[in-house]
Length: 363
Image 1 (cartoon, rainbow, N blue to C red):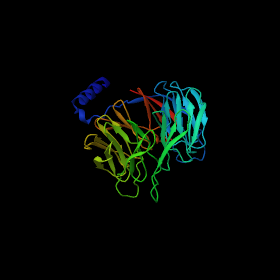
Image 2 (tube, rainbow, N blue to C red; image 1 turned 30 degrees about the horizontal axis):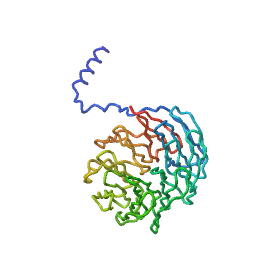
Image 3 (tube, rainbow, N blue to C red; image 1 turned 90 degrees about the vertical axis):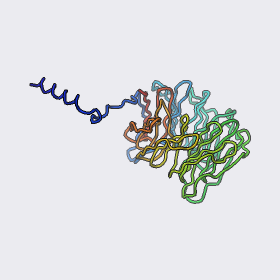
Image 4 (tube, rainbow, N blue to C red; image 1 turned 90 degrees about the horizontal axis):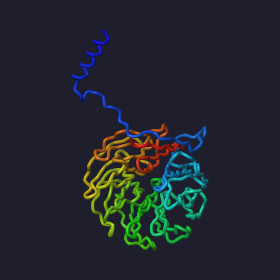
């Protein structure tokens, strides 16, 4: 009787239309290891970790700055290599390049540390909260503060070379800052008043400045400019994504969308994160290719890995299919994810809002 029942059930399943069957589980990643970086205070409410991890492309060492002012270096095998105490929390991931860790801190200091040992090489006191991941080009380190100043310092000594500043607009602004982007001897920066600037990387002289953001309460451009060929791409919170001519700053195209917070280049498309959705646009003409709603709050910049777009949404790390925009999974460690993920090869590193570092292997 039991055998007959199983055969009948199998026959009914075979005759049922495939579209009515539940989808098979999607295995996008597996957890390789986790590490607690921050002790959990008993009375802390809705903790956030905006700093996030940086990964050395040569060795795979991960360095993450956390809200308690610590930098933690962890090997790809989950060994804790060293820790360094800063004077305040970290709002952006460090840059790791040529055996040196460059990390900007909320105490106003840019630290340069030896990757192998964590020993301090030099520090530069900007006297403003450093809120972006530094960039190294032409022997200079470029970084921006939350008070709308772009600095250039010598990568070997930490000595000041030049700075460029725009006065923030009156009233409130979105907390955050756009990192610098460098190409062909030019530094591109963006500011809270909706202005994008192109500066000579060696001396800081202005090649052009252009206010592009639509008028509104929050004209901030906190997305790091993205450069491809002769164009620069930025997102303005007051409602648009722009492609600008890199030589002149003139607008090649614009795509209006409220709350444009972050963006990333992915081949021939620009992926922008707004307060309500993720939008993919053609890099050539700004045509919308897809859009996907999400729940949460935009955090760090999206990351592209193995055909996926990884979007920190506060509630977790949202995985989207790059080609179609289909929402696939949310990696939620239980406390949410605010910081951008770091990618090296087939491994993704994310920092939870409770200060746990995760190493995920892409399936």
